[in-house]
Image (cartoon, rainbow, N blue to C red; front, top):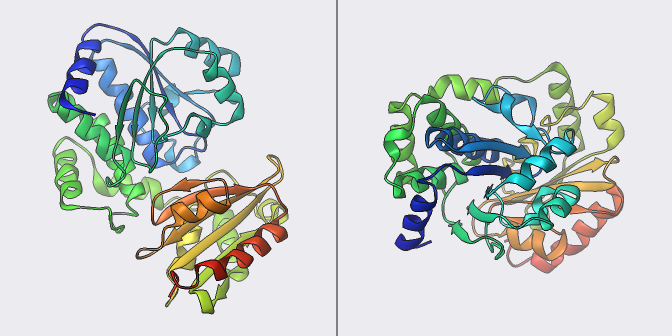
Length: 338
């Protein structure tokens, strides 16, 4: 996006509009953080604003300011569809292809013709938006949204609620500021968010210190299931539907599990395979360290994508067959995994 684009958006937003904000399906901290921060910001500009999420978020994000105002498409389809149909502008946050909202909501969006504005940090964005603000070098969409507001010359409107939402998204998408995309600019922005009222220790505790007994039991099962493929410096975890059920699985319980595999000495590539009988798929999360691109790996083999060191994918084969396919593919990347 160039200077003229930002000036055009500023002009468009200078008069009240009917606006909808959409995060991706299975929203994480960055998706909800950016969506809710934008929600609070646009309300300050006197717009009619609704966040319509494809499905619900994990329990550890339920505390976020404004979360209780989000309309869930999956459980409130009729109302959500009506809201989408009335939208003059739809902001899509933290995803770069419309199908990332899931099949049902995607079909509804295909019938509409609003002005789309994309704000996202994933690689290879699709060309569906009138305005696309995309930068895969940035650690999070929340950081991009801060920069977006800055380019509109409106940082003065960031209050404690907006700062809290932005901080939460940056915190989660940087792995608590551990990942390589965390830059000095990230820390400068975070410092400003603290000055604006974000409570760093409180946000961290609400996100990370909420494990249930069942989640810890499930983590134990995941660690028991972990396998290491030393030749390819790879480790992977699998969880079957029966193992999830046994431990009373709730959305978000497996968040971060794949990082345990990546933390092993000499491992540079990690994966977790989670069976989802309801959707008839195997959900896949991939992580890497160094230059090995899990984004390319997922795009090439598992219908997904993401970032160089963090990506997701899916398989419609069985859990066993998906893992077998994964193991069969590894030799193709032997030189990259040394």
